[in-house]
Length: 586
Ligand SMILES: Nc1ncnc2c1ncn2[C@@H]1O[C@H](COP(=O)(O)OP(=O)(O)OP(=O)(O)O)[C@@H](O)[C@H]1O
Ligand SMILES: [Mg+2]
Image (cartoon, rainbow, N blue to C red):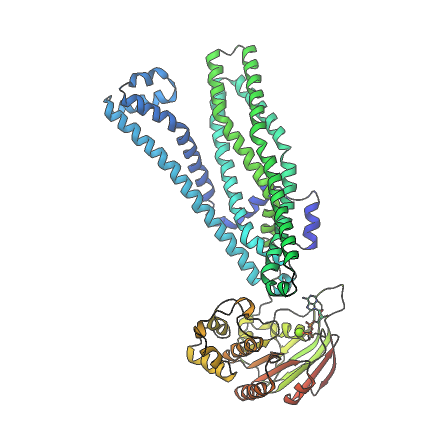
């Protein structure tokens, strides 16, 4: 996440290594620890099967041609396998060929199983990560999430969760390759300890050489994450701002800034690939040097020629594994920043929405703000400064004040999107944070400013108010707010898609749909935040009367700039610059 502290953090030297990041993330899979060793074992089996594959095919050929004695002449592990087979099934050529064929099939199946399991595991990891990140976005305190960059949030959820699955893949590959190197390395030591030690020293030197590559790759990884964040932001702007930017004829600007963000991501990715591609040639040169050194050392120390040749052949087998270790190491270095952002999203203390334990059963008297202070940003003056007022049950209260005075902030506190920095909010004398959010909010409904319609159908939008409502209930509330006829005139009726931010409907229609959604909840406490500003006065009057009728035992809070709104209210709370200026009777 892009809080100021973490940005500073990423620049200081204390940043964690990619290994530490990926190991920290494995902590999220504690109940599936077996998967790591399992994948390493399967990968090692597949690697060995792959290595043996060609030899087995040659032996099958020899067997088919009836030349099995040639296999024995060749010596080595294949000859031993052949010997073992003959001792079990006898020396009948077609039986031996059949056994080789079965072996080839088995090793192909092992390779296949490894590939399938890799895909299965990677998809499981990606899904788990996606679900966990999404869970955070849904459950962390709204106030904590609200100021975060949407582009980064989207990028982490959509893309970086896959990076984690890639990182786990590389971690398992390192496991497989380290095991393979140990197997072949042991073979080397077995052949000649002098050759073994020389090869070991050379491998360390080549690794040290390649290590230099990971510094720029890590830096590029950080820059790529930042570039991807910008690109995701540009995507959001182009999608959400489609209408606004077009009506201001900003297409050229949009294309330019999107193109710039997009090409920056490409440039950084290519730069990283340039460096990563160096592993091949550098490794090649390094191992050539190592071979020369080994040949010289072997010659000087009197190791015989067949042993030296066998050692060199083993080294050739070993080399791709060493190179893949380096590839994985470099890939992980490039993912460092991404892994860090996922880790920071998932692991560590984060503010959750404040949750109570009591079940709210209904308001008997009043909701009270008692000296409530709230500040969005400590550097600015508080949005609410020791605000006190009362909203009485069964009444209609008007909250009036100029733009920016703190009305929506008050509503966000009532809706428990925010929690007060100071003072308390009580219902019938009890701090309402003692109640569970769900039980408190089940008695509240809001329509108006900032409570938009969301992507989906009309019916889905209405049912946000009451998930179990049936069609009759839907039609009833729509009729109350005079939107039913509009809906029934549509070819798809309640199944009409409402479009991004409800744009398939007019402003006044959207407001009426919002009102219907709030009424469908059958709330005890209804909040109307400029909820009818786009509806013509006659219709507004009729709707107001019907709402007053269905809410006759309930409580209504109306937010408005309009002075005439006071006519409908029992009381008025006037607010200016975050302070109560007049709370007549409240
Ligand atoms: N997310 C936020 N981050 C920082 N400051 C905010 C945020 N939301 C609101 N503010 C500030 O808090 C103050 C009160 O804002 P609020 O939205 O409550 O005003 P309002 O009375 O609802 O205004 P309007 O009538 O225009 O809707 C304003 O100064 C505003 O700039
Ligand atoms: Mg507002």
